[in-house]
Amino acid sequence: MEQVLASLYPWLKAGHVIFVIFWMAGLFMLPRYFVYHQESEPGSAEEARWVDREAKLRKIILTPSLIAVWVFGLLLASSIGAFAQGWFHAKLLLVVALSGYHGWLTGYAKKLARGERKLSGKALRLLNEVPGLVAVVVVILVIVKPF
Image (cartoon, rainbow, N blue to C red; front, top):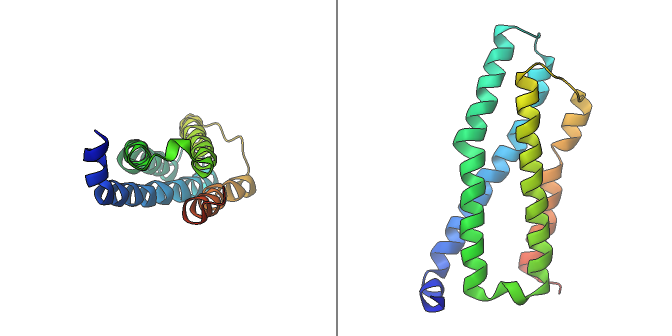
């Protein structure tokens, strides 16, 4: 199995990077959608359009990308023996946290769809920075491998 994974390494890496880009794009877009959603009039046609846009973003881009990131990432990690490396443990922890953030966003989208507007636009704008900060640290861990 290791030999097969090693021969597929460039394809696994390409797939992982492609779906990370899609996932991150969705993680940047969804909180921005929430800001516009919350600024719309409750019960309006505009609000209904935002609910639909958020659902499509989650179902078409975010969730499939999350699944692909995990599948390609775990196969990639297995192919290079990353499970025994410290930098990978830190990266894995951050990806688990970002996956939890994804889940939280999904839950918040469902609350917004029910009319619950618990966060301010400012709080949502700040949340929009989370994936970017995580991405910076993950890229450093993967490229530099500081430990």
